[in-house]
Image (tube, rainbow, N blue to C red; front, side, top):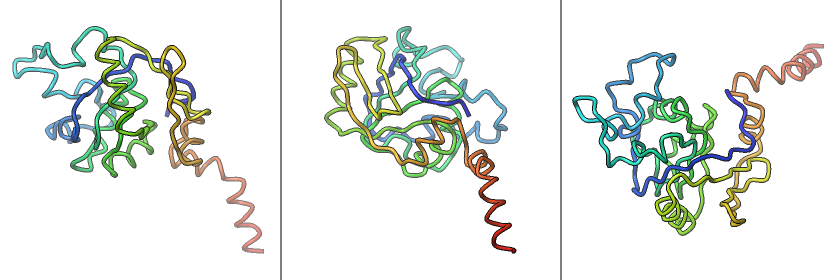
Length: 196
């Protein structure tokens, strides 16, 4: 996984609640291997018509947002089925942070395991961010993981909570297996003391 510490990037507003995992990546792509470029499937049925042409009104197809690395969405983002592929599609597209008032539980767990930071902020804060992003297409937000802050240009910022284990894994670019392997000396010392 790619390390995440400070991210200053274009933020994409998604002004709808209950964006489910089938909207994030349609079910027909679930049989593809992890090595597939899942970023091309991100919001596939919302971004493209059946003939492959873009839907011009969809926010990700608008020039200022194409390079977004942060998503700001309404409540219950990632609800629906438990497909890890939804996280892969966001991550492979280049999205590293999703900000919303709440997330589907399984989506949030899958995000944590795959290097995608989910930040829960109050409804009012998210609504104000979405309105600002819609008024100012291409606006950058700054996510400071060590300080646990989301900052706007001009100084306004919002604190967020994150567990110590997940924070460490994101900062170090470790998945669960990498973390376990990083503790190998302690594991071996315990095994040695336990046996003898």
